[in-house]
Structures are given as C-alpha cells and as structure tokens.
Length: 426
Image 1: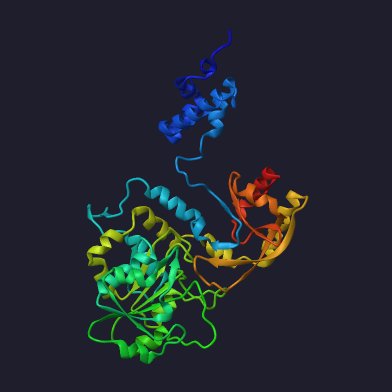
Image 2 (image 1 turned 90 degrees about the horizontal axis):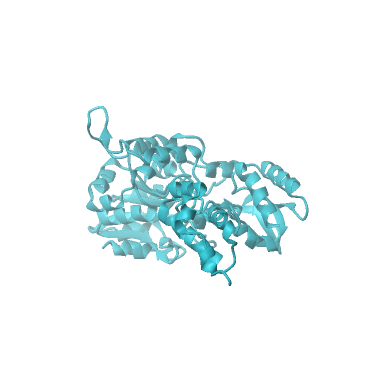
C-alpha cells in the first residue's frame, strides 16, 4: 500500500511549535507566520519540499519584518529618489523615531503637568536653522502646505502661467489650488512675466501672490521672470514662495537652487518646502515666515487635518539638530572619494567589474539639469534584474549595455553589503 502524501505533511501546530518558528511569531505576529506555514505545507503536498525539511523551509521564508516595505540599496545615482522613499534618514533621526514610538510628551508640558504646544522642539529647531523666519508650522507634505495657504488666505491668487507646474504622477499645482476654492489669476505667458503683470492683476479680492519654483524643468531662451525681492517691494499683499526642495541655506554645489533663508531674507512673507528632499528628513511640508500669517494658518480648521504625528516631529527635529544627514554627505562627497570606494568594490568583486565615471542627480524634482560628477561600478547588463530581486535589493541602472551602480547615492557603510549582493547574483 502507498502512503497518502497528505499524511506526510507536518501539522500546523507542530510547525508553529518549532522554537525558531515560535520566535518568528513573537517578532512578526502569529497570523503572518501561520500564513507562511500554510504556504510551505502546500509545497510539501505538491512535492516541492520534502516533509522533513518543512520547518527549515518555514524559517527560510519568514520575512525580515511585518511590513512589506524592504530596505533597498540605492545605486541609481539619484540622491533623493521618489520611488525609493526620497531622503534616507540620519541615525539620529532613526533613534528619535524609535524613542517617540512609545508614550511621549508631544503635547504635554512636564514642568506644569498641563497641555503644552505640539512639536515645540521641532519648531524651535526650524527657527534656529532659518533665522529669517519668525514662526513655522509643519504639515504632512508640501502640497498640503500649499493647500492650507490657498484655503486660509482665500480669494484670488496671482501666479505666473509659467509656474503652474505638474509635480508628478499627474498631479498639477493649478488643480490643487482650484480644489481649495481659490480663484487663480494667471499672469504673463509661458516663458515671460514682468513685474507690471503682477501689480496690474492685484485687486481687492487678491489673497496672495504665489511664486512657485519650477524645480522639475527648465525653460531657456527668450525668458523673463520676477524675483521675490522685486515682488515684495512692489505689492501690498502676502508673497508666498514655494521653493520645493527644502534647502535651508545656499549650497555651493547647487548655486541655482532657492533656499529658505535667502528667500525669506529677500522679502517673502511665507516660504513652503518639503522636509524629505534636500533638507534630508521625513516627509513633511514646512511653512516658515511671518508670525501673523503662520498663526492664521495654525488656527484654520484645515490645519488639524494636515498636521503630522509625533514620529515625524521627532525625525524632523533630530535631522535639524543632529549630525549631517545622508543627503548632505552625498552632495559633499568628492569624486576622488567616490572613485576610491568604487575601486575597493571592484577589487573585492574581480572578474568583469570596472570603475567608470558617471553623472549623479539630485532627484526629487530638484536641480533637473544639474549633474553631479560621480563614480560607478560597471557590471554586465544581465545582473540588473537579479540585483533587484536580491536580499537586500540593489537598484542601479543600465547604460550602454552595462549595469552601473553609482556610489554617490549609496551610504559608504553599505559598500560591503553591495559587494555581497553582487556576489550572490553571479
């Protein structure tokens, strides 16, 4: 007589009782681990896994965490890669989030035992980093900051036609503004706008003049624009500048990128930006500027719907107060340093691996035409796909029939992990 193969499948309770599987259930949750057990049992029934190897197969199939998000090595050369989560956080920001994940004093004054201002530490850190700002608030992204401003200031918003941009995935600034109930007064043409266009458009219903930095494209040739300082000196309504990338102050590597300090010093009443781009912190929308206007925004009912949680506040404060975040280190890295790192990786790999010069990008819609000189490890093109499927996944790019792994966008601490990932794919 033949034995029914179903009798050979280890029982669920037996597999869950294996100490290694039980430890996984403690870490990941029983339901998730039970799902893995059931998948392995199906593989045993189909003959793909021997019954005696079932427990080992369960342990091997357990995920690293209960989240489906996976750590990825960014070797694309794009420093702030939107598809890879934009700015990587500093260790200080990670530690701050872990500390804030429990019970915290986010809205409690421990000295008095009474309710305190929310996120006071993050706001103080912002104001210390941008002295030209009188006050600041934090919402969940820059689009939310713009929506809050448009809703609160209301009425008619004067904006140059050439600044009504699409910010990605089909989302357009004019659609966002109109959705708040604001009316747009478009001035100038696609390529040229003059100061008189703005001043002629301002009337009794004007809520603000918007300056939106076209960070993800460049118009060249017969062009003209109006700087914030010119607008601030000529109009008697709030001037609001959306600079996008979150650069705190001028950066020598990005001479054409607007920054918070300079824009406010030039006369903007409010400046908006993202927290997860060149600032190097968590996703957030930052609004800095006039104390009176910031207070109006804070008291508007929509602010409550857009405010951030304690972990974002913790990560933002630690990014501002702590050591240089990874994005800033990536910008500052010299080509000689990058070539040296690439050479060490190539020496460890041997075979058909070479050091090549490459060009990195800021990413995140910032400095679209600006290329940062870099160095990359060149590998056969066939490795691009298995590298993405590895553990950890490595994302590079293919150019001229080769897979390039650019080291400017990779933390130096991950160079050894990159070597191991490539070896595993060969």
